[in-house]
Length: 508
Ligand code: ME8
Image 1 (cartoon, rainbow, N blue to C red):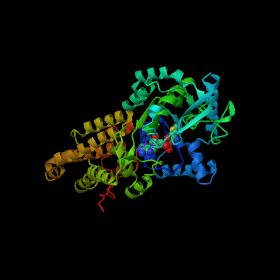
Image 2 (cartoon, rainbow, N blue to C red):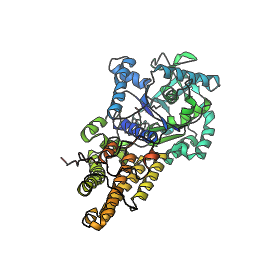
Image 3 (cartoon, rainbow, N blue to C red):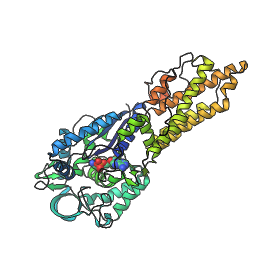
Image 4 (cartoon, rainbow, N blue to C red):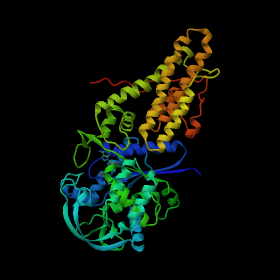
């Protein structure tokens, strides 16, 4: 039976169109899923939009639309942007989808029946931007640290999830299982919050007289669910919960990808909700940092957006992916800059990889009539370098670190470039006695390029197949382990150099 891999992104609020931040998480997920798919695994990749709640209702009102009209206008822009960016989710979920509404009501009905919910009064500081009550400790100078506004004081009679009775269990799990929340700094952050004693029960409802736009509580129609209690359940809906065949198998392999802004719902609310429902935990929550612009988080509320599509249109699909995945160490923040996009492109894509391909094919053209040469005997150390890179890429993927995967892969690109310099095929070509050696050296270089093409495809889905075509290799259809086996290029087949892979970008 093939292994399963289920990966989710946050479902984004459609209160503004997508931007570089949401494009980053979704591209990151896309790359991981492409790699797992190439390994022959059964993959499920879920993204979508989070359409209920106060924030959306307010944005709709400001435009003179009903919430449904409003989300029907913006949500498709997310789906369209992901398609234009070549991203490959299996499902684009909307929290207004019928199956999600059913799954959510089923989930909360279960919690009610298990005695996990109580009705009581609550007064607190509520941030409309976050759609949560914040504790005193979370405020910075009396303001929400994310939205930089003072929260409103609110009292309400509401339903509460008895989250506090699951916190000790969760602290214990988190302490024992470092892989549950990565990188480690975010596990520590979650533990610090859990151990601070600041957490209590979770308010899960909003009175309908105040907020109509939400999923009705299955056991009291006078209330709608607090948007996070509906949104988080999307991950279960995507697996087919509660009644589709195979949902438990899919659920059992789930990993979530988010930025650090939504650590609390994902690292506190969600695991305790799952535990209360008697469902298995996620396998891993993987948390990345922010893309900043002018040292401030790129965000819809701050309005300092970078349009990912515009970057893609200007520099190309692979250039955008490469920049995002290579530049930001997973878990840390980074500053977006167009100069850095160009610098990365010119150094790594045009110089290192693009030149490797063109100089190699140039020599095959000059010395071997453009045909893959027949190797004779053993080559050099490139095969070992290729095997090492493949294994390092695999380890980095397991650790959800795409930057480390690219660094390992570029180690092979660099090894191949150095091999050419050291072996100097142009000198071998001048000595008839070195003919066999020349053939072997060139074959090794082409094989290294083939391995690079196979490994790079999940990261650079356009360049990978182009390199294979230029080498005269068939597009790979097998699984990664088969495609990576050394020595698959057929001697005598014609190479097809074509246009430069990544022409240099000259500065304006
Ligand atoms: O929070 N840098 O939706 P949201 C990196 N609906 N990533 C960024 C980013 C930035 N500057 N800005 C946004 C919500 N993101 C909820 C989620 S999930 C059940 C519900 C990305 O539209 C990043 O993935 O505010 C972040 O976690 C997400 O967008 C927040 O999206």
